[in-house]
Length: 157
Image 1: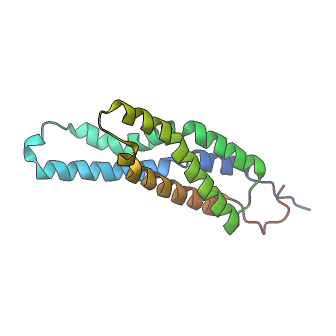
Image 2: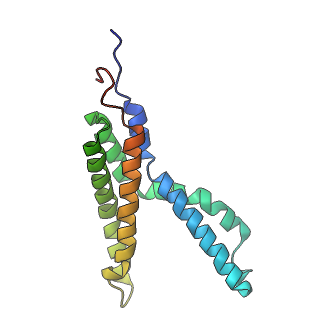
Image 3: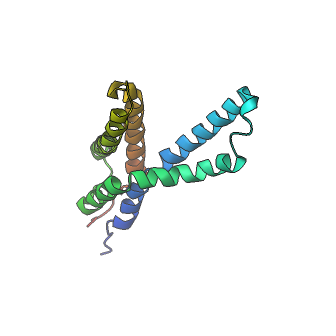
């Protein structure tokens, strides 16, 4: 009988590298916003070096991975050790827990920055936190949907 082993390494790496995708998308959006801002204000043309704009889509994902390395290292380890299979319930639970983990990880940093800025409050950053939660939830759900093994595979152990 041919046993199918649980793809721990594939699942672990998929969830560990999960922040790369939103980091890439955010860096593309930031690059386009900067280019549009420069096009609207031509007097700022000397302020931004072209190399910075060209590196942003490559450095954005790396920065996102560095920021979320510790929580997603633990998250990926737990998912791989639990041998989670792809069901609609497990994808939803992973999406919600990954989004909560990412948001809770960023909250102390946002609070530290807000406490140093005079007149700033945490409520000023709520839109960004909601965007972070929704983005993390979508990314974790898609990662679970594409990389977790099918529960119909014979004897995943």
